[in-house]
Figure 1 (cartoon, rainbow, N blue to C red):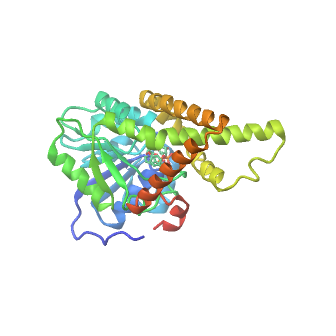
Figure 2: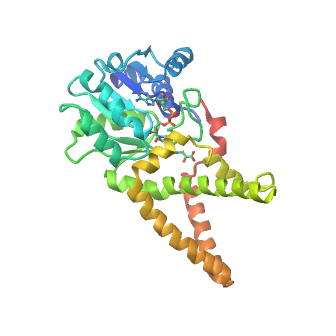
Figure 3: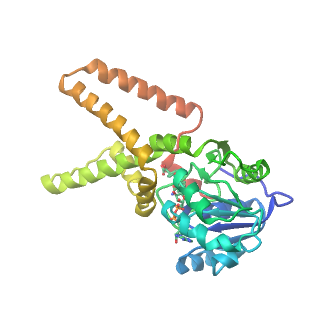
Length: 311
Ligand SMILES: NC(=O)C1=CN([C@@H]2O[C@H](COP(=O)(O)OP(=O)(O)OC[C@H]3O[C@@H](n4cnc5c(N)ncnc54)[C@H](O)[C@@H]3O)[C@@H](O)[C@H]2O)C=CC1
Ligand SMILES: O=C(O)C(=O)Cc1ccc(O)cc1
């Protein structure tokens, strides 16, 4: 999968990325490959990450401080764990120019918007975002330029957001290959609880249960696991800090979805106990159709191919 060719003229002057892990480094690579910004600036709180970004050569400037990074920035994208968004916003707040756009890529939107609004000054456009694209890997080496291609990037601008600022940010994501959708923070957090957060929790749980069973029974649960369990182990290898923060910051929606999930699981348990084969067959037929319709519209994640798609 390839990106479109570089632009003849950049979309903006200084694009600043704070937090250069999987997502931050993918933004730098995508924006760099297509010459989307006059100057690409990177900052990370970890000195080792800053040094690695310098070695990788994926930014024009690696700033030593948040202040240096965001001086004269046109767009700043915070790519730190959800629980660190407030601290990252606080560190850049006094150094932003009026009219700058501050966005983020956090997997939760309500708590992040609250944290950004608490720290950022009037006159700065706050437009939260979330590219619904990723892998189970972390760090600056894990990113790749095509990560966002043909994937959704959700923006959750507040109702009074400046339409021009939203359009500029939309243009940046579109140029990185993403399809942009806007929605409210509440809607985002409920939808993502169902499609991403609870599925990750289920994966963490099933892998943990299997590991515990292995210890208890001395059986070889993990060794002889078939394909389905292997898929769960990929998801359960996702970054612990990131996912701890997701669950702590989207509690309400996750608990609501988990309540419903638990009810449905108990209904399945009953169907198995009472040998209600029709119930099982009906559900499995419905879910198979859902998977097939996802593939038809080209939205399946094709996760095992991520490594091969890096560019
Ligand atoms: N990993 C994934 O698949 C996806 C992650 N996201 C979101 O993107 C964000 C970043 O995730 P990843 O790139 O996977 O994380 P990562 O763990 O690969 O990178 C995070 C980076 O942020 C830095 N950092 C932490 N606190 C900081 C601070 N206060 N100031 C500056 N740098 C700081 C860390 O040193 C680290 O280099 C998270 O909010 C996550 O919810 C969104 C879509 C997909
Ligand atoms: O690796 C996977 O399958 C993912 O689900 C990646 C992912 C993780 C977190 C997000 O907020 C969005 C995408």
